[in-house]
Image 1 (cartoon, rainbow, N blue to C red):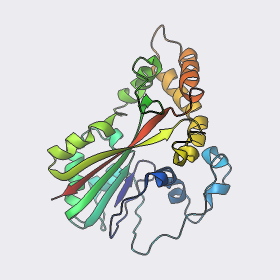
Image 2 (cartoon, one colour):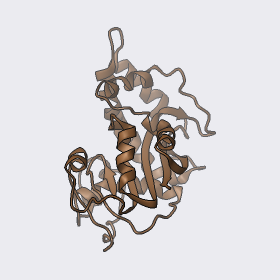
Image 3 (cartoon, rainbow, N blue to C red):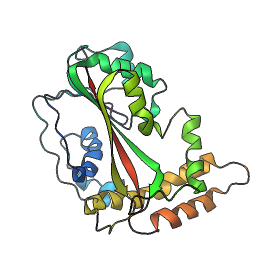
Length: 254
C-alpha cells in the first residue's frame, strides 16, 4: 500500500528491500509516471522534465495493485481492497506533513499491516540547511522562519518528518529508525555525485516555490522580494554542497 500526497495511490508489495541512497532522487519523482501511466514523462514539456532526463518507467509488477483517490475519503469510506491486516508495507511520501492527527493516522496505518509488516514514510526537510561537511549553517536565516508560516496556518507541519519517530514509538511500532539522505541545491558536489540530478531540479524549482512561501508568510515590515533574494544568494547561488535532507522513517508492526 502506498499513500502519496499527489496521487494518493495505495499499492501492495510482497517484500521490502533496502534502496541505495543514490537511487533516492530518482524514486522521489515517480509520481509523474503514476499520474501519466504508460507515458514517457521525460518527453513532457513542463517543469522539471525539461531539466532532468528520465528513462521510460519500467512496466508495473503484476503483484502491485493501484487505487487512485483522495486519501482521507478512502480512509473514511473504505475500499474493498483495503482490508485490515493484509499489507506487508505501507509507504507514504510527503503525506505526514499534512496529517492533523498523527497518532490517529498511525493507528489506522498500523491496522492495515500484517504482523511484522513495515511502515515507511519519506518527508523533505529543507528548513535546516547544511554545508558540504554536514554542519548546520542556517540557524539565523530569517527567510527559513518566514517560509514556515503560511503552511503552518493551513495545518501543514513541514517539520513533521523529524518528529515522526516519537509518534511511531508511541503507536508501539518496533525497530523504529530514521535515516537522512542529502539533497543538494546545486550541482557540482563531487563528494556526493548521486545528488546531481535532483540538484538540477531543485535549483530551478525552488525559486518560484519558495517565493510563494515568502509572499504569503511575510508580516508587516518584512519584504518578500528581499527575503527571496537573500534565499537565492545564500542557498541557490551559495557554496557548493549546501543541502537539505530527505528524511526516511521506518517502523515495524510487532
